[in-house]
Image (cartoon, helix red, strand yellow):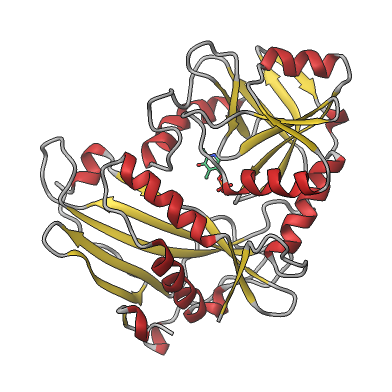
Amino acid sequence: MWEDLEVALEKIETGKMKKKPSSDDLGFGVHFTDHMFLMKWDKASGWHDARICPYQDFVMNPASMVFHYGQAIFEGMKAYRGKDGQLYLFRPQDNFERMNRSAIRMCMPRIQAEKMVKVLKALVYLDKEWVPAAEGTTLYIRPTMIAVEPALGVRPAAEYYFFIIMSPVGSYYVEGCAPTKIFVSDEYVRAVKGGVGEVKTTGNYAASLYMSEIAKKAGCTQVLWLDACEHKYIEEVGTSNIFFMLDDTLVTPPLEGSILGGITKASVIQLAGSWGVDIVERKISIDEVLEANDNGILQEVFGSGTAAVISPVGELFYKEKTHVINGGQTGKLSARLYTELQAIQNGSQDDRFKWVQRVG
Ligand SMILES: *Cc1c(COP(=O)(O)O)cnc(C)c1O
């Protein structure tokens, strides 16, 4: 499978293979598989030294530019084990293409998206025993690029690593999808137009931690971000995009520079559209949402993202007040989207949009 990829294969010695965690004790991103992919880039040779090798530590120069100026981008995707035992990837090419958009914005080298899909399939196939089988469990995949040139000048680095690591992860919800309590931040913001909010670069997540801690202390699981100028228009929630079912129309904020364009979001729009749901991408303010909720026309609210797929919102906590959405219950559309997206992802439903790719 990898012979024609110009990727060296260095398999782990059988005796050094790690013990696999049991499927009820996976957590999120704490266990890593036996192998990883790594390649290096420098100005003279471009990408080179591509290899699938045993999962290993890096020896890093403390002056590596990623440590100082945060030139780093990543992706998040999953491999799913179907009921037929086959392994599937969901729109993997879209993730690598998005990574290239992140690379351009962060002055980093681009990767060959099509080739990376093939490399990823080879890597997943090699570590196939690590893809868990229990309901809702998956293999989370983290492609990452970092600046490794040792230098302290502020400029794009001349050397990079691109790597892919993989981690078996538990079901996001113990029992199907359950509504969450969300903190609406009216003080701190995630991203500004013209900034880097629309790309998956590490600094965005470091910058969100302070507000996330405040939200946690208030008993909320995620932060709903408002726009940076007026603190009025809704942007997204945690690492998910957001949707509002309002008076029989599905409303989601438009991608205008500060919101990360989710692959799950695009899939929700396509899937719900195919069911005849009216969908509009338009600005929506927190005041409009809460007023609609008071008037009984806000039917449901949910987030979309790779980690949780669909995450219904049961409560919004805004300016010290709790607003219960849809009686704190999972809405009909949320439940249907969750079930159908999962069924497509694990190959048990006809893949009419050609989203799924089989591994091996
Ligand atoms: C990754 C991410 C999303 C969701 O993107 P998916 O491709 O659907 O997983 C949404 N918002 C932010 C900030 C993200 O980092």
